[in-house]
Amino acid sequence: MNEKFRTIGLDTEDKITEFIDYIDDLEDTEEIKSDVYGFFEEESSYNENHIPAYVVMTKYKGKYIVWVEDQCCDFAISYPPYNLCDIFSTYDEANEYYKSLAHSGIKPLSEQVEECKSQLIDEVDLRVSTMVPNVLNIKVWYKNCLIIEHLTQFDVQYINNGAAG
Image (cartoon, rainbow, N blue to C red):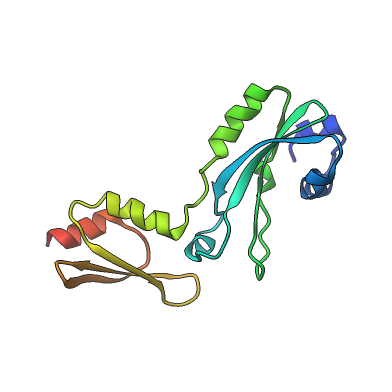
């Protein structure tokens, strides 16, 4: 548990969890800013209907609290890692931590595909699906020929080697 939370009366992980869950309902809070964190798990990033977690900075009782808030899907329970939750005395300290968390989670599948394509030495066609729930099946086509199938991760070097012959 982060000991700094004791300064605002939160002395157990359960109290921190409850505090973060209801922080928007507290009277003395002011949300400073929020941005996309990303996903906690690869499997969640594969489904375009899932919503990524967000990093949030809030001012409460003269302190700045930064945490990651999960916008979990309806059928799964995902708890944000509370080791990403921290409290600061100054805006500058909080902002540095906030910036370190923004966009640091796992990217959505569509962004992973584009990032992989941008690192390839030649243009290939990546066809991505899920074979079984939560397992990628990537087929790589090069010059209208299937050169790789059943790839389960975006391995740029492996794809480049396949395209090179």
